[in-house]
Image 1 (cartoon, rainbow, N blue to C red):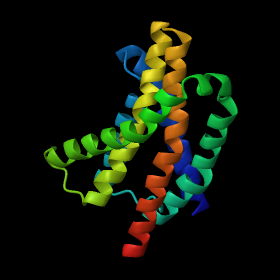
Image 2: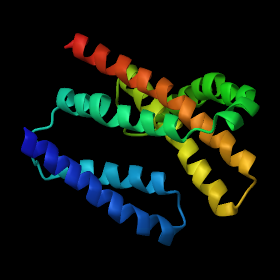
Image 3: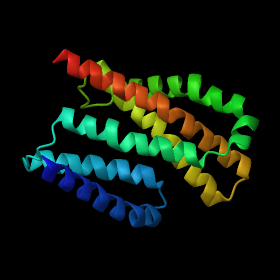
Image 4: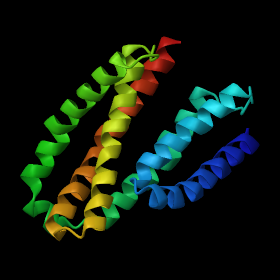
Length: 181
């Protein structure tokens, strides 16, 4: 099992190394390229019938108990509280109603997409992940465009505040899936 996790993490690291030059070459957001490469890699593993040893429960444990706490700590450590206080109302509007609307719209688009045959719970979890990934792309685009620092901090504040909401959605979905078995 440890060997499978090491192989998984090495594969994820290799994808991250490939994604950066591809994103620069295609002039696309880095996170979008990571998502596409992850989907392609997942489909390739399934197509070739490779047994990774990582089932749903092990993978959710690794993500929820190892990776996400580190990301949340990093976000809290890098947060500029003065700027967050200054833009608190717009950030809260983007985090609360904005995140909910983006998640529901993304879920509706996923349901309408041809070939997507997932239960509503899975669609909502995927939509929460996809809609909360977007602020990363927006922040990187703002940096590339050399926009005002305040605009960048609005996106960063939204990203930092959305992580707990996304994590809660993931945890509730993983718990519902485990209880449903």
